[in-house]
Image 1 (cartoon, rainbow, N blue to C red):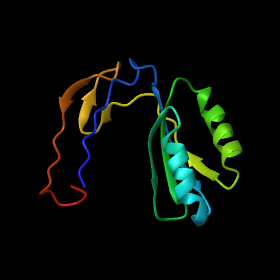
Image 2: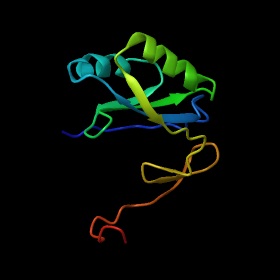
Image 3: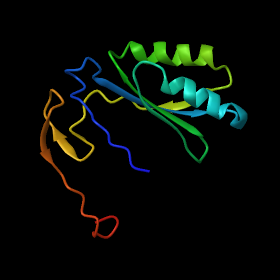
Image 4: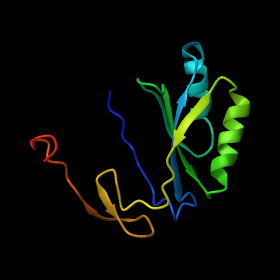
Length: 120
């Protein structure tokens, strides 16, 4: 399956704070919780993953104050969900293979070398 993705200059779009949340959800609740989180405003993506945390939610937020607010709303809406970790990113210098200026606009492309040995 191929999906095309379009991104925008997050600081200029009003959502400069990027936060991935790693969570644990009871397996029986995972489809329902995942579909509900995908529909939340600010959700960049949400996916079931394997490992100690079985769900990752990536959100674009307006401010740092929105991080605990989002966590609280998600916890109230889905009591079985436990957020195990989060990382707050205030600025991206590179995203999706593009170098970004301080406003989040693409300035150059860093093409992947698909033939390079891993770790080089």
